[in-house]
Length: 140
Image (cartoon, rainbow, N blue to C red):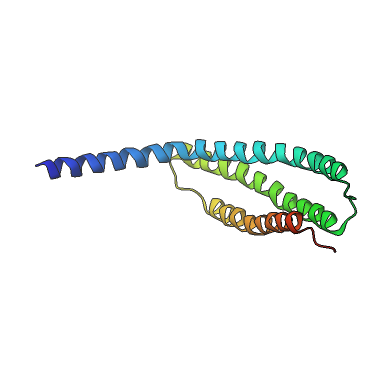
């Protein structure tokens, strides 16, 4: 008897969780989009300012090869980040529309998601390269 009660409770919890996820998916995408904009946006401003101040304090020229490459990779990362923010906003709109109509997510959402995911790889690779450049500071 305890097993059948646990099974029923498990199914109910599962159904409630699925229902909650379906209702919250639009909200989740919206919150993720806001977070993915606010946190990197503050970094986009603060990092170059603090980087220039630090380089000047330590005595590095901003024309040293590793710094120039770091800046170029930073710009490349931004070039991948800006479209991602637009994609997330569009994905939010598509998810909200699908939720309002009680329909599954459209194929356009899947295409945007795959593109969003793909954009993360070169951006992450560029950030790793920037980290390496700043740690090693090779003569370039």
